[in-house]
Amino acid sequence: MIYQGKQKIWSEYQKEIPDDNWYYVRSCIRQNFFPASEKMFMEICRNVLGKDIYENEHHTTCGGIAYHCDTIPQETAMTIVARQFALMTEAGYENYVASCITSFGNYTEILETWHEFPELEAKIREMLWKSCRKEFKKPKYLAHSSDLIFKFRNEIAEKAKFHLVNKETGEPLRVVEHIGCHYSKMFPSKGVGGAEYPYVLTGMIESWGGNIIDYPERRHCCGYGFRQYHVKANRGYSLSNTHKKFESMAPYKPDMIITNCPGCPYFLDRWQYVIAEMEGKTYGQNGFGIPVFTYEEVAGLVLGYDPWDLGLQLHQVAVEPLLDKIGIEYNPEEKYKGLNSKDILKPELPTGIKCF
Image (cartoon, rainbow, N blue to C red):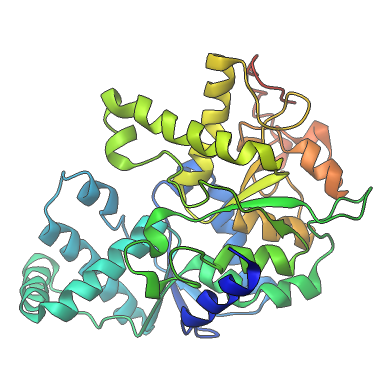
């Protein structure tokens, strides 16, 4: 679709995102996959943008994965979410921001269901009171954390020390953006830019100097799919989905991939290693893979944070070629150092794909 057509779609799918005073809930799987991303989100909101963002150590998983895998009933998932809202209410907040795309989709689905079936909301309120003696107000505003970075993308650009530009040629980097399925596919009006051409990551990339790549499988699932990966017999389907995406984007020679979902960067990153081992094929330049980033990691890079403080050493695909292309300095000796320069040991490197 031509850019003007996308702009028309984007104008029809806008959402109100308050400037400040947010209650933040982390993702259960992000803390295992790329834990520094959430730390960077809090760093940017509090110390770069000066925003009030609060988190409660007693919040739990939203139950989304179990719900979508059919291991807990809907009413159980709703009661878990009701407790989350109760913690927000007790803290005195009304703007709710979720780190996880599945959580965001889960919260959205539950709020929409309660709107259509108020008797079910009443039942959940009763169940919550019986289980833990808590009451709640529903959020006035619900957002995903990528919505907040999108809202302040230009402020970040003004403070940027680097841009998504090849330092040697001056050309914008070629960027694939990948949107988590639960962001706006179920409820297009709840995502910035709708479902077909979401603008939430595109807006960041444009503000920070990169160019977006359009390719046929742009909206295709990353391959995670809870019922695919979590059921061992279905993992071949998970891998085939990821393979299909990379085959589709490969002719356009992307420099990097940016995602806004906890599972997507993990699978787009890790499955490249598996494909390389199985087929002897890599999708980046000179035997490397295509590096995959969360939007918080990219925001941290353009703001000048140390790549290893962003947790980029946890990626399977080497990030160093991209850092070199942008002109971001890094110390290779510090890559596998933890707190207080403790040696966390260099992992065994794969043989089918180049790594450092």
